[in-house]
Image (tube, rainbow, N blue to C red):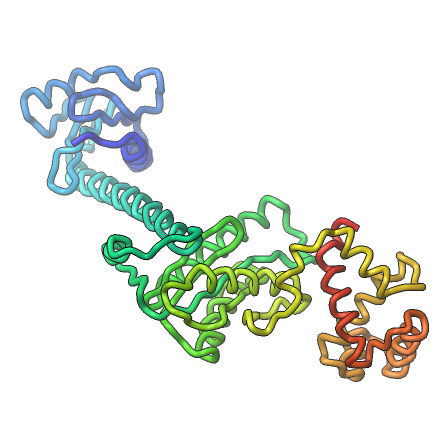
Length: 375
């Protein structure tokens, strides 16, 4: 069996750290594949070659110590310690066990990584493949990965968002986002029949069929754990219910759209697809059209004042029209907030307190959130 280069490097590093000596790792042909001196890599170590020819597995003298690496009951290579070898003979049994553990751990990690890539390619084809027919071969292949694609399922998605007032560096923020997605994926996979697929900055997940209340509780539990650990928002979207395995692509898209809507909303709350309206079509509307809509709704108001009105209305609508709660959030007296809402009505002709006109302002707030970074 050939020893992989990454395995050899890891063994050389660990043994060198334990012994505080120069360490080489050779393959079963005696060729050096790991060394602190890169110029020696690829050359032949005569002592390792001699042990290979003699089918020996250990040798120690005053200048060299060499012992075989074994993993999965196979000869894997040799560790060569150069220089003073005093005291090493008694440590060789422990060093052998350490090398075996490192080799088996690295191999298991590599195999797991390969298996994960195969699974991800399949999940991408299954969940996002246009007009993908569910064949018996596809079902059988999925079963081989312990995935039942014919069972009733619910789909949900996560989008990590860094808080606006976060002062961390851009690099650290990205690190936290990546770590949050990985950890959320592991929690999703830990659920019975759970699967998870990382698609860029979106994590698509699925579990067995649950009612809406159970889905909400389950998703909120994942959110709470991830947000507490990584100090960010984990915005979530949930599909509209199990429609059978022939409709998974549609339900995935619904969950993803609901998660994106959550990420854009001020509260970043978990959203069900069935609870969102025009927001799902927002990305089809050009930015200049959104800008014109905002100016039309906030007519007779200078551009530099619109941001303040957006801030006020977000608080008002987030509290479902409660003057008292909105005023408390804004830190103003109730009478002041009432005066400002009347002022907005007088300037625009649209009463934000009226059900008739609230949708106009709601859409304007959503469009403003979409384009505010480009204003």
